[in-house]
Amino acid sequence: MENQTLKDYVLKNRSYRRFHQDVEIDRDTLLELIDMARNTPSAANNQPIRYKIVNDQDNCGKLFPYIGWAGYLKDWPGPEEGERPSAYIIMASSLDANATIDEGIAGQTILLGAVEKGFGGCFLGNIRKDMIAKVIDLPENMKVDYVIALGKPKETVVLEDMKDNDVRYYRDENRVHHVPKRTLEQVLL
Amino acid sequence: MENQTLKDYVLKNRSYRRFHQDVEIDRDTLLELIDMARNTPSAANNQPIRYKIVNDQDNCGKLFPYIGWAGYLKDWPGPEEGERPSAYIIMASSLDANATIDEGIAGQTILLGAVEKGFGGCFLGNIRKDMIAKVIDLPENMKVDYVIALGKPKETVVLEDMKDNDVRYYRDENRVHHVPKRTLEQVLL
Image 1 (spheres, each protein chain N blue to C red):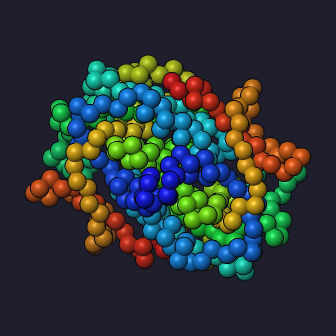
Image 2 (cartoon, rainbow over the protein chains, first blue to last red; image 1 turned 135 degrees about the vertical axis):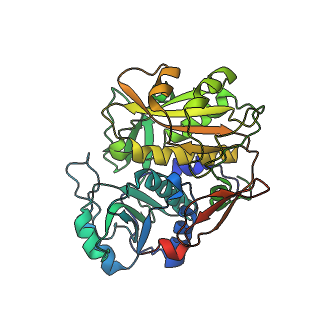
Image 3 (cartoon, one colour; image 1 turned 180 degrees about the vertical axis):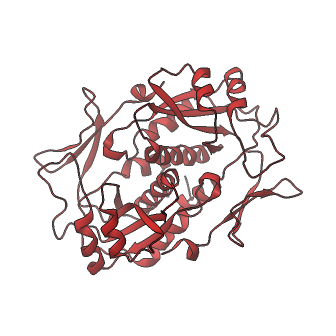
């Protein structure tokens, strides 16, 4: 993080959906991200999240059909072969746990860590949890909650001030991905 | 963040519950934290979180009774006068919104940012949301979700490997706060 602030990381940490699929992320790198995530705050310190690493082409391919990529890009079914994530970290928890706040905390930490290591990702909740559980052979007393897709980003994502209260991101003719954000004034009470 | 890694920040970002209450946090600093938070990923980019800054002694004092501090420290009602937070950031959302995953993402970003600025905080969910809404005069179509307490930390918090699956943090005779964390092996599937 030399000569960079946390804000630099936060701004670089966009939701990337196209990657250089041939750039692999090794298991040790992914373990470092999870090792950070396990040391984040946890509600009542329960630490309900369990993590599954998927970073081989075969299993990444098996997960891919069960992930919804970009709800507002109606004509885009997700990244084509060659631009897909090279790794996933899947967050799961016990059937009786509500781990959502922990998963936000841990997921953002993983994504910021990925940025630090020259990667990027996308936090995905629109997923076929039942099918993903089968792919990763999840124990029956657990459920899949979120998937973090990771890779070497291949797209440009720009932030812009929101207009007309329209939250929908969009892609321009140069395939640049635009994300409208509420201004500081708009989020303050 | 010179010569520091994200991991350094993550490890420094403990849940602090005792502060140098006389060290104030000015509004511009808190605005910088919220400005980072508003640029984090948001589910469907809906950006449901609204933020309320409280950093004056009077209002901090009014909020204090409505915050549950440390569930596992049965004999400790929370920080005494002089060791209380000097600021709070309250996260709220519309009554019909479920902003939890966003709040985890944003809250962790705020806490890491606080660490960068030499402060620290505690992410609090065991709170009297109804009463806090009154203190901050929240619009009726909104609800309080979480409170982040902030200040200059006055306590030492240490992490240790969890034993016997016991997640309860505890304080030793020197008032050092110990937090058991599951090992990396224990959180991997």
